[in-house]
Each structure stands twice: as C-alpha cells, then as structure tokens.
Amino acid sequence: MEIPSRFRHPIDDPDPALVAHYDKLFAHGVGQALPSQVQLLASALQRGDPLADACVGLDLAGDSSEVRALYAQLREVPLWVDVDKLKLGARTARRAGVIGNFVLADFALMGGYRSAAIAKTLVYTGELTGATARRLVHTGGYVALVNQPGAVLPDGPAWQATIRVRMVHARVRAALLRSPTWDRARWGVPANQADTLGTNLLFSTGFLEGCKQWGLRFSREEEEALCHLWRYVGYLNGIDEALLPVDPAGGRRALYMIGVSQPAPDEDSRTLARALYEVPLTFADTPLRQRAARFEMALRLGMTRRLLGDESVDQLGLPESSLRRVLPSLVRVIGGVERVRERVPGGTALAYRLSDRVLNATQKLAEGLISAG
Image (cartoon, rainbow, N blue to C red; front, side, top):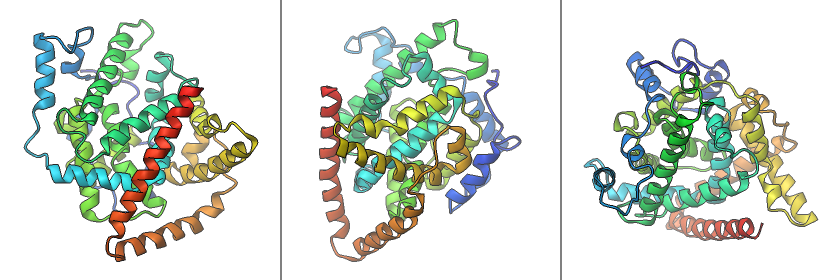
C-alpha cells in the first residue's frame, strides 16, 4: 500500500523542531523506534475502521450482519483489561481538575492542529473556526464521561458515547473518500488509524506529561492506570491492538513517532489554532470577564509554548505570552501543594472529590453558555 506523501520518516527524516523539544519534554526519554514499527505506523495512515465503516448508513438498532459484527467487537472485553486499573485511571485524570482541561485544549488539541494533515479533515468537513468553542465543549464532555470510574465498560455512558464518536469518524471518512477534492495519495485515509492513535495518546500520555509541566504529580501506578484506560478506549474506537501501547514508556515512544512524522502546519492549522486560543473570549460576556479571559489566555499560552515548543507555536502564528515569566513560580506552588497532598492521609481522595465537583460545575456552565449562544 502506498505511503501518503504527508508522512515524514520518524527515524530518517523527523521534524527537527519536535525532536529537540520532545527530548526536553519527556524526562524519561522515548526509547528506540524500530524500522518495522515505522512501517506499521506508515501503513496505518491508509487504514480506516472496517467494522464501523461497514455500518455507515445502517440503523445501529437493526439486526444486520454488519451491525452485529461491530457490537460483537465492542462487547468483547479483552483479557488484558483490568477493571480496577480502568477506575484508577479515571480517578487520576479527574484529579487533575481544571488544569487537566487546560492541557487537553492547549496541548492535545493545539498539538493536533499543528499537523496540516489533521487540520485538513476539519477543513474538508466545514468545521474551521465557527464551531471551535462548541467542539471544545463536546470534546471535554466526552473526555469527562471517559473519566468517570467504570463508565467505559459495556453499556456504560462513556461506552455508548464512544460508539457515537466512532460512527462520526466513519461517516466523515466515507464522505471525504467520496469527495473529488480529497487527495488520498497526499493525506491518506481521513480519520485514519495513525491519526486516531495520535489523538488517543495526546489524551493519555500527552495529558500526563502536560499535567506534570503544570506541577501535578502522579505515582507510577496512576500513570500506568491512565494509559490502561485510554488503551481500552482506543480499542473501543476501533484502533488496531498492534498500535496501542501497553505502558507509559510505549506511549511516549508512539507519541514521539507520530509527532515527528507529521507535516508542518499550514494556513488552515494557523486558523484553527487562533480560534482555539481565543475560545475563552467566547464565554466572556462582560468587560470584567473579558479581562479575566485575556489573563487566562496569556497564562495558558505561556504553557502552550512550554508544552509544544516555541518554534511550533511560532509556526502556528500565535503571539508571545506576557505572563510566561509567571509560570515557573506558579508551577512551584502547585508542586508544593501536590507534595503536601501526597503526604497527608486522605489527601489524594480529598483532591479527587474537590476536582470532581469543580469539573462537573465547569462542564455544566460551559454547556449552558454554548446552548445560550
């Protein structure tokens, strides 16, 4: 199968800006990538999701052989799935609170927009800037469901939501492959296996690394549990099990390989990035809230530069941050609070409960503002 021209070989021709930055970001390193792994990743750019693709246009409540095959895979919980790890992974993610939301937007989504290839799917489906705030709220709502302990198991709310997400990807894939304007030789299959894996890893490995940059701390058990949770979510989303990392080290290596093999950002990437950067203003309906939103934007932009690297953020056309120098002190304060939390009996459980309440209130408020708008 022909490899799309968008692909940069992560061993022979990696993105130099990201190579240098990932070396700094991933304190534990990324390990050695093998040529056979590169080939697996490259070929995944031309693969969709056969089970979901076969159900496009069908009633999922029906009794066709295609629908039965899809649900058989969704209900077959692999033997490697550990229910206790799923629950710990969900609690770990929710303990990150609002900082976790910042990381999802400023690293996971912004990092995805940096790729011209990934941006193209959004452009071709007509979702460029107008739907950015709504898309962010919907993404946050989905991640919040995944991070409810036990919700990803069959018939749970996150399990059901994942089916909807998977079928949206399948419908988008079918529509773009029919479009005469989609260049498969250049971009590969829309919402392909490799790009879907990249998103999954940004929500797990990327999430952990981003939260650490804010000063949050995780035990090895918590890191492994969060990666385990999103490995299962990847399985539910139709990602080939051969692509799904089994531990945090594998997640870092896979995220590195996917990141440095992406094409550079283009004008569509810059438009999407600017719209995402300005989302806080969407919810600012008074002068006071506008000032608060601009403060938040400047602070988070400083962290975006820390997470993605200056060269990448410059390529996205985003400005410098006026509050960047504040970040080291803030990170030290958060790190200090985290050390206290680790030492105080019941501190982690209390942090989870408080963050859970804040996240629920924040998501409800954002959904209300979007609906009102």
